[in-house]
Image 1 (cartoon, rainbow, N blue to C red):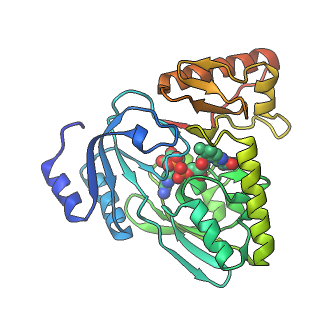
Image 2 (image 1 turned 180 degrees about the vertical axis):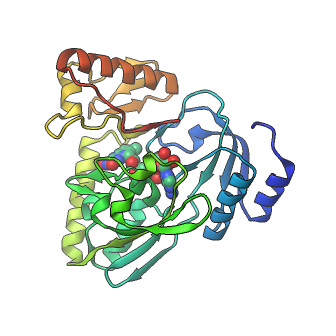
Image 3 (image 1 turned 90 degrees about the vertical axis):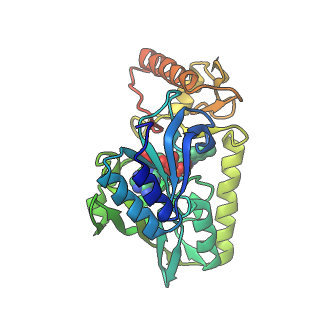
Length: 301
Ligand SMILES: Cc1cc2nc3c(=O)[nH]c(=O)nc-3n(C[C@H](O)[C@H](O)[C@H](O)COP(=O)(O)OP(=O)(O)OC[C@H]3O[C@@H](n4cnc5c(N)ncnc54)[C@H](O)[C@@H]3O)c2cc1C
């Protein structure tokens, strides 16, 4: 689909979308690598976002959704799908302990707004990169918290209509949800339940959590966070990789972080193929020494 239907492009412009043609995904993912997409669409409003979804469906244009791109490794080749960004779909409403937040809202901003309102429940998620939609999609989690704990309901575009679904219908599991399996379901917004708390205590936990992150994680390098899922609760992937002497191991520009062996970092000029080779190398070693099959947490596009 490198050539476009002129009418579709005009309709997207009429909706107020910003369009980027032959856009490098490296500009939009935290790993700073990967090939191009023929069309990168940034809708400017929720209405424009929903109309964009409908239009692409009507014109049978394959597409994917990107939040903040912090959990994606795009391969180096040219893609044959368009990408729709949620970055401007970021409204928020607060009613007592309930927060109604759009999918594109930055998770960090959400945590700071919760703090402003003395709402407790997200403090251990402070520092989680990405958007609300991305966190729901993969049921993101850290330091004993996971997204599913706060979700009361979700608004979802099912290909035709916007419907409301419950957490049980979202089928949350460890780094899993229905959205990973039913790609036609697009997360529009979420209602989250927090609890009234003490602002200073919330702030302290947030600062403590953020400190843990920058002490333990290589935040100074481009990456997509932890590469692998934990295969079982008692198997720590970073520790296993470290025990194999792989900290600092490098293929091309991709390196196993010296700081946290569960992270692969881009040393500046990594290609996606370097990262994928390194992932396969690590998988092979872990399988050989521990008999454990690792699965990636990051999405490969
Ligand atoms: C330094 C660093 C630290 C990290 N730490 C953690 C951590 O502690 N815990 C953790 O769980 N993750 C962590 N991550 C991974 C990542 O930040 C989270 O998974 C985050 O929730 C992804 O959000 P995103 O908006 O960037 O998603 P993206 O990377 O943009 O997208 C990820 C997937 O979600 C889909 N998606 C996004 N929005 C929608 C939507 N509205 N509807 C349907 N599908 C959608 C995309 O199509 C894609 O398949 C870390 C990443 C980095 C770089």
